[in-house]
Image 1: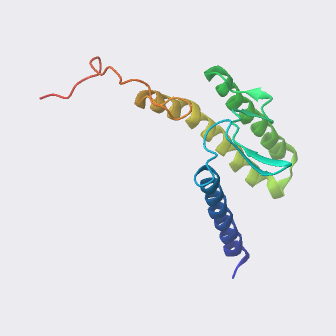
Image 2: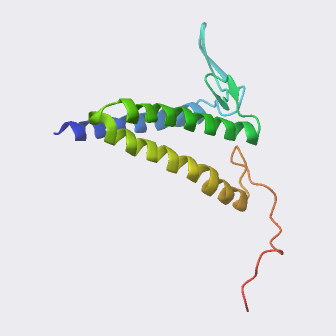
Image 3: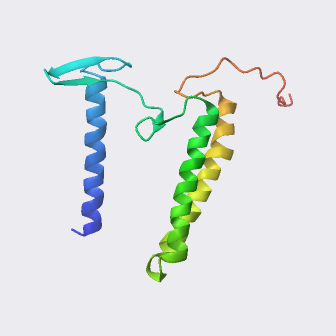
Length: 144
């Protein structure tokens, strides 16, 4: 077995175990809403909390502006790190850094300018809830 196959197998196994644990905690154990608790030991309680920010909640994404500011800050910090690798990393890592930098630019562009208008069009809001039915009377209608 090659090292690559072993690594892929381990990654798939970790993903399966992760998804099973999430199902087990939110399903049979009943910790499926914010504030739900399950004391396991006198000093250990499982508690459902939501973190809508980064860095342990220090930067909260409580509004659309804040959410996109977090996306922009993440993209910029990653892009600057990769740019430093491109400029100062040497030939051994330059190709990898250029490809990663292009990936950051393309993915950030698609998240902001492609995905967002699509989600707005289908009426999906943050948290997975749908908005009220859209008025489609102003949209072009198919010819009969």
